[in-house]
Amino acid sequence: MSASVRVIVVGAGVIGAATAYYLQTAGAEVTLFDRADVGGGTSSRSDGNVLAIDKEPGYDGVLALRSQELLAQLADDLGPFEYRAPGSYLVLDSEDELDPARSWVEQERAFGLPIRFLDRRAIHAELPDLADDVPGGLYCASDATLNPLLYTRRLIGAARERGARVRPHTPVTLKLEDGRVSGVDTLSGERCEADVTVVAAGVWTPVLTHPLSLLVPIRPRKGTLLVGARGPLHGTAKVMEFGYLMAKFGRTRSVPEEFERYGVALVYEPTASQNFLLGSSREFVGEDVTPKEPVMSLIARRALRFYPGMAHSLFIRAYAGLRPWTPDHFPLVGPVKGVPGLMLAAGHEGDGIGLAAVTGRLVADLVLHRAPVVDPGPLDPGRFTSA
Amino acid sequence: MTTKSPDQDLIICRCERVTLGALVEARRAFDVSSGRELKLVTRASMGICQGRVCHAALEALYARWFPPGRDVARPRPPARPVPFGVLPSLKGDDADG
Image 1: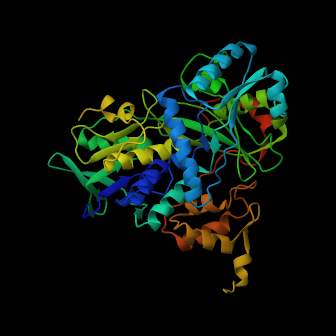
Image 2 (image 1 turned 90 degrees about the vertical axis):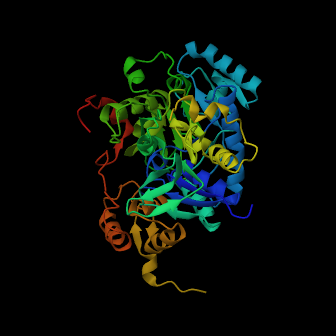
């Protein structure tokens, strides 16, 4: 090829960052726009989970595992972003969950996940801070964690070193010409042309595509996190409750109704700064990211149920982010039928940090017509959109 | 070898031990475009006091380094650190926030 492919990526969150990185590394000429800060939206308001333990066997699991492999490579290739892969635990709330947990382990093992069941004695040996009555748990060895904002910045930094242009604080609109997207216009009237424009704007994607009469079914789902002060940790492992899976997939759990109403389930994540994060919640309440007392209270109650010793730890901060929800829990990645020049890479809900690597790589493969790293079929935006 | 001027060792954020020099260096190394971005890469004001001590100094630096309007400091709960043990007794009132 004599000239490189010119690509505009709209959205400098973790998905846009990974997309820019893989494209620029493969020889495309990338310009990355964001209306505000780098990673200033959802990517700086999330935890650092990179999980396979919570993925369903099949395509869901394939995506997660491929992304974990790519991420391990990125950890070698990029500057440090607090990446570590200590594995993760799911802990059980009651003996009623023993059977579902065992069958989850069986189906995940059959699929090839490095996951094992831990009985009462084993879970308490591995997680001594856990409440005495926890009857068992699961462990997945491949799960990792990282600092989402640093990860985003390292991807963008590496893309920039290879020649990508990075333009934060520059809102744009898509430019439609003769039925195709030919690039973007900035608010100040500058026109930027591209062969392909990738919209990786998470919950704000519909705002960008709306003027094209393209309806993208991504909705903001609020997730709240609490931060514990630096101090003695409650174990160095990342721990979630088994019910988190049920909350994620919208299945029934045996918890009081108020936990269900706000989608509250334990997520405990010790961070590299020696603080710890507590989640999680899932609510459809528009774009308000103010942490609310009922949700903070429920998250703390859930944490204390599993970690009674946390009652004395100090709570220093709460924050919330908007997870880009889609109707089938899969992101929209790939070209949009009927709108040449446009690709989407958005809608990862709570999995954007974990799936950024595979998403960025897949977009690069599709733009450059290479063999795709995973089957793009199930992520085809065409399953929802019509232009 | 470069010599650092002594004020580069000035501690701006005590909780996270972030010096003026560290802020200057991070701003350059990460090509930072706002105070919030700088905070997130250095942890300045993210420690136990949540910026109650350093926010005035940080805001003065941000005002010098970044265009106006990029740093809306939002007060966030809790107003001061509290044990997690007090959270379950919070009133479940949706109208607050």
